[in-house]
Amino acid sequence: QVQLVESGGGLVQAGGSLRLSCAASGSTFSVYSMGWFRQAPGKEREFVAAIDRTSTTTYYADSVKGRFTISRDNAKNTAYLQMNSLEPEDTAVYYCAAKSGFLTDASYSPGDYNYWGQGTQVTVSS
Image 1 (cartoon, rainbow, N blue to C red):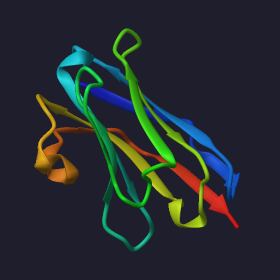
Image 2 (spheres, rainbow, N blue to C red):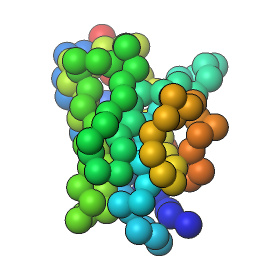
Image 3 (cartoon, helix red, strand yellow):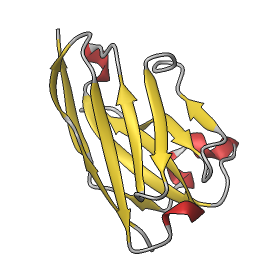
Image 4 (cartoon, helix red, strand yellow):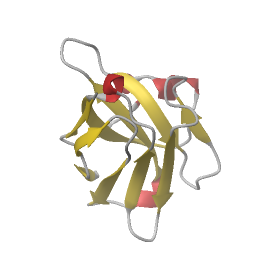
């Protein structure tokens, strides 16, 4: 079992950048594929990005392609989400998630992930 803790959220102006971190503990980080999801008030949790165990494969939601970059450092047991050119529509609680094994088409769905962090708030002002 792995425990996940997000950090790096905050308030930023439109056009600004933030880098979220997801620190993992309690299990071997490199066996998990990692995902980032977000949830705005009154909306369902939605997929943002995912990365496989060796950083070979990444997935992105169309809404963040070209602006967000997911990465991981297995030596530091940490996954990252670099967010550039932020827009007010990116305002949400951001969650990292872990799943055993490879990314698949199902990995765009929250139900494919076994472990979740507590979330970090990102607010983008216009």
